[in-house]
Amino acid sequence: MIIPVPLHRWRLWKRGFNQAAMLGRELDSLGHGRLLVDGLERRKQTPSLGGMGARKREKILAGSIVVASKAQPLISGKDVILVDDVLTSGATSNACVQQLKRNGARSVVVACFARVLDESLDTVR
Image (tube, rainbow, N blue to C red; front, side, top):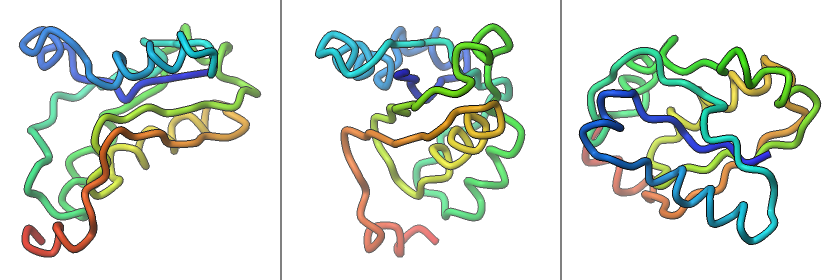
């Protein structure tokens, strides 16, 4: 199962696309799993997390990401590829992984397009 990191509906509306979902579509087309675009929901609108330290990101994300009720039976017992466009502190991915595991995912692997190195984060903590 391929599940992208979700955007809040207002951010999706403003941007017009979800980069993680676009990457997920490519993985699906390459045969790496079945894409479930709406597997996770970002229920709480959060500010852009760029420039924040890990602790602040975790605090802001608390309770904002959930497994969609219609997706729970599809996720249960499955191996999931969580797709993120940019992995910075890992707070968003951690919140997603936690929800997927709580809702029965057998395993979760994070696939990201870009990774911000820890040394880069030292300047924003």
